[in-house]
Length: 179
Image 1: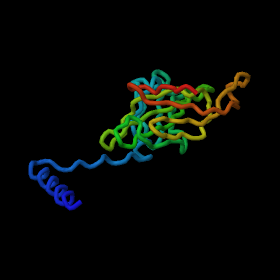
Image 2: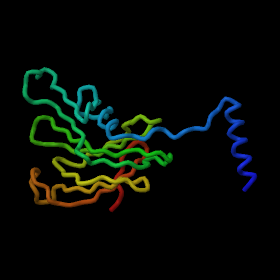
Image 3: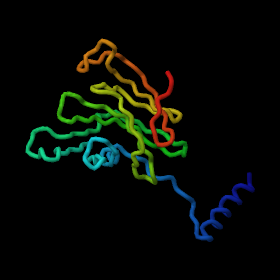
């Protein structure tokens, strides 16, 4: 044990003397950062929704005077932190709700990697139109979404089917796991 107490400080001093320094883990992601980041999306004209305070708005080209607009919002307090890419650093899973001005509200699950303390959106998957997400958790690299979606006889407005869907991040995509 005495050897370790001598060797560790010696190693650290050699590392510093050689111009290196012990690496520190990146800063943790925050909800505030997640609500103010860019998410790739097929909806905005440029393919990216730059959320500000949890919201993105865009008037449709040529319809700037119309009441309809694209709105993408951070879905309430439904998010989770956990390691998604096995690098030992906590990443995040968040939910976004997108409305294009019609009756549908499209709910998506978004995977966000901690890139040296900065949120980096890497993947998304559609959870459904007007699905109701109760919670999101991350455990052992798996994202679990507890939600209510449309059953076989439900109208789009009124989902009643309770499900727990699981996803994993693989090769830049959120892949559903067999139930």
